[in-house]
Image (cartoon, rainbow, N blue to C red; front, side, top):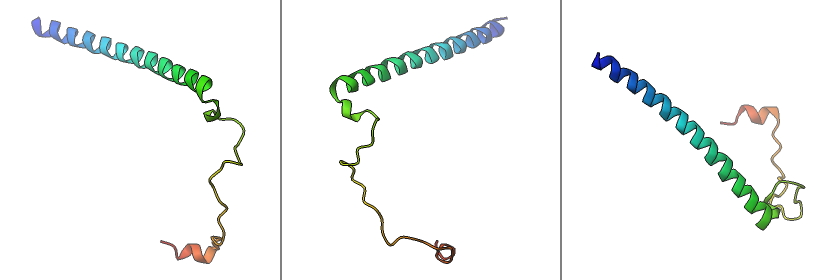
Amino acid sequence: MLKRFLGMMHGIRMAVQKTLMAVSLMILYVIGFGLTSLFVRVLRRDLLPGKARVDRACWREASGHDADADEMLHQA
């Protein structure tokens, strides 16, 4: 009888823990990303995705790296 009662209590405790963790993580996610988004919108609007910033890009066009089918066969 005691073993069955302890087993039921363990099951209830695990269900409550899973529920609390799911709710807590959801609240943390909403608050965390919500506040971060708010701060970015107020303080650093240029970090938000939008139009591509071609003038400030750090990428350069690659040249001389065209591979044909024969070169692809010998690559590692």
